[in-house]
Image 1 (cartoon, rainbow, N blue to C red):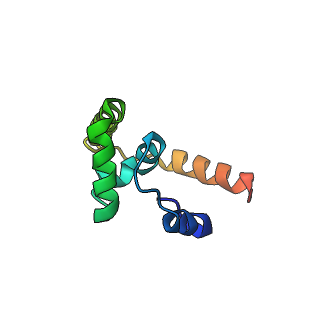
Image 2 (cartoon, rainbow, N blue to C red; image 1 turned 90 degrees about the vertical axis):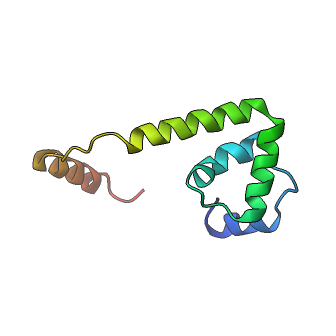
Length: 93
C-alpha cells in the first residue's frame, strides 16, 4: 500500500472496488498475506471477475516462491565493498 501522506489520503479515499492497477499495486501484500480484511475482500472480488489479473497474481506468486527458494550465496567482500562505494559515490538524490 502507498506510504506517506499521499498513501494516507488514498486510503481515506478508498474506491469501493479494486481495479487492475490496484491489483498490481497491492499484489505483494496479497501474496505475503499482509492485507487487511476489507482490502482482501475487494482484491479477491476483482480477481474473480478479471482473468487477466488472476493470471498476473498466479505468475507473480510463482515468481516470488521461486526466488524465495533459490539457494543462498554469500557475497564476496569485494562485491560488498564495490556496492558500498558505489552507493556512497552517488550521494543523496
